[in-house]
Image (cartoon, rainbow, N blue to C red):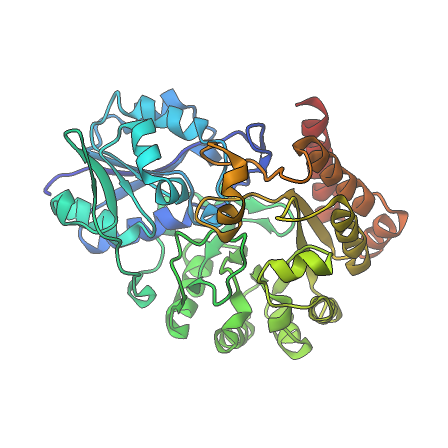
Length: 456
């Protein structure tokens, strides 16, 4: 389409904590929108990117910005939230309603429409819902391809709902370098890592099948970029975007060990300081790899531990032992890394004693940071399928309460935070490490979290 004006939009949730679902919202770049902007640029189509979250733009202010655009693509979950989207979609829906006053061609992207396309279409009344990976679908829409000929769409044709076939998973080697020139990187940061913060992905998907993980946006299987391609992206965020920190936000970064080693060696060779972090499995790291990554600037490794109960661990289909978790954290610690461990309460069949075991295991592991959350039965997961009959008709359930009431899940989550972070041993250890900046950022987050829990 000639002379089309395209807007790629991330709406604004409540910052930092959304009272609708207790999600901690961060100022992280909208990587999926930057991917799309780069793909459209390759087609000769310019697209503006607006991150209403980082700009703290209200729904009506977003609508004023959108005036004059011929197409608006709005995401309910940018790539950093594909796996853990906000449950409270009211800010997203409110933004859509305001957009409809100024633009008739609005398309929705993100996890919510991928797992609940008909419901989200009914709730918003937009042109179409884009299911799963959005990049190639957006390009075809902007090329002017008829909607019924585009895979991965759900839309209304009169009173009929049209559901086109799922789009085949894309070849990640065809992705261009994300269009970081469309945003101001100085607005983004990660409180435990630093500012001028960028996101990159070297792969999509995961070769494992944990029951709680929503992977609708990634599809089945595990796909990777080639090493040279990813290294070019790393060079671009440093040389052109001026990134000082980065999160390589793959679900399991070191599962692709050759790429992890190659990127680390490249960063060591070029000598430009970049503090970065990854998420991975504890059984896919060892001391030599951790030392190499640390030398290359990797400061933090995130591990999903989930539960400290042996009985519950076996039900999660995670395929990892507690001994492997301890060994992986020990390797990271010995290499000089900081560690983040994630734990959940309210999993299928989990009792209060199981939860207490998780708290004790977290204290035993003693990572640099521990994050405790109520487990979320996202639609599209095995967790959801197991408990669907007990949840009822909630569109995006806030918890599974078949065994433990929600109020107790909240109380034990708070108990876990207090029990972990208020230990004299922990506080003394953090001060001894002289990580004063991250320690005080962490303390501020902890206080704000306590305020939210106590006053909402």
